[in-house]
Length: 201
Image 1 (cartoon, rainbow, N blue to C red):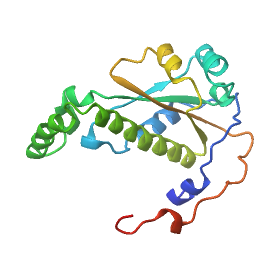
Image 2 (image 1 turned 90 degrees about the vertical axis):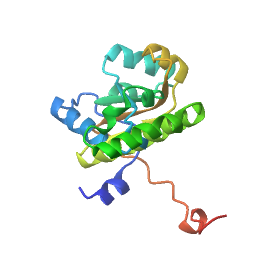
Image 3 (image 1 turned 135 degrees about the horizontal axis):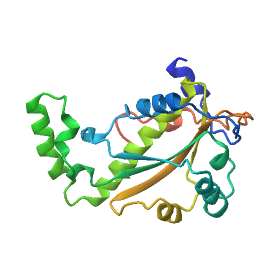
Image 4 (image 1 turned 180 degrees about the vertical axis):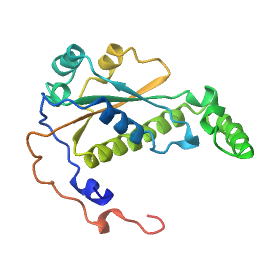
């Protein structure tokens, strides 16, 4: 599938075939494609929590997820989180294939860029999550799967269920699988005239 086709055809699907299973190879391909998404300083601070346990998924759906069927019926349910302190944790490992002078420069910049700016650490984590989510959904579309991004769940309670570390941030989840029902027609996009600004407001 062409990238443009994947972008235009991707929809938030709510109804999945609960009997369909992705193969381990498909899942690996999907996640290996997802981690090609960009991150500031190549920090790769996303952490993908694969919600595989059927009982856990059922609890999230029933108790904390507004009874959204895709939480239990999708072939794969991925909860996106990110490590906000990844910039402190052996930062040289993010540049193992970079020229030495480039690696040293970026590692030296990384500390001053993040230090004492908790708001920026959180913003960068969420930006990275967003780019990885879109990469995952487009990759799934290209593989013949459908997806649904979701933030309609109790973030604090789900964070407790997965034992989210204190230095991590929660993001949305994405359900991936085989659709059993098409999405309704696209509600409509704003025109470019409404959203594009030349050189400033």
